[in-house]
Each structure stands twice: as C-alpha cells, then as structure tokens.
Length: 96
Image 1: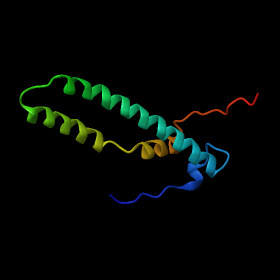
Image 2: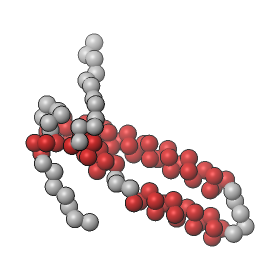
Image 3: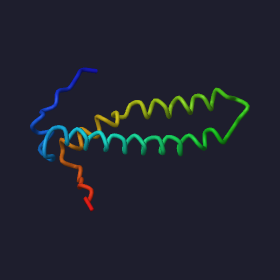
C-alpha cells in the first residue's frame, strides 16, 4: 500500500493549529477503535456460542469475519479523513 501525503494546511483548517488537529484526530481514532471492538465482539458472540463438533466451520466463520474487518480502513485513517472532510464537530471542555 502506497503512502498517502496529507495537505497540512487543509488538515489544520478546523483547529487552531496543527497540534490541536492531531489531538482531535487521535481522539476520534480512539472512539472509532472502541466502536470497532464492540462491533467485533457482538458479531463474534453468536459464532462462539454455537459450538459444533466440526470446528473447521466455526474457524472459517471467524476467518471471514476477521478478513472483513481487516479490509476496512484503520481507525487513524478514518479519523484523518473525517478531519479533512470537515465531518467532525468538536468542542472545548468548559473551564469552571
């Protein structure tokens, strides 16, 4: 997979500076990763619950599910795309 470059000016347009944009993207990537973990566990539950005598079928189901998740963009790439497309809305914590 070739490395893609990012236009840094466009990346930091939604934030005050580049470092803030990186923090925004990293926090969003963490949220996406947590959502993916939950989705994977929910989809693996029925596969694990039905224990059959033939483990090859169960292993094949696990493998197909694993390959499906591997084809998706990584959470960091998704978060960067969201920042670049201005799909993210963020706010500062209230300082009280």
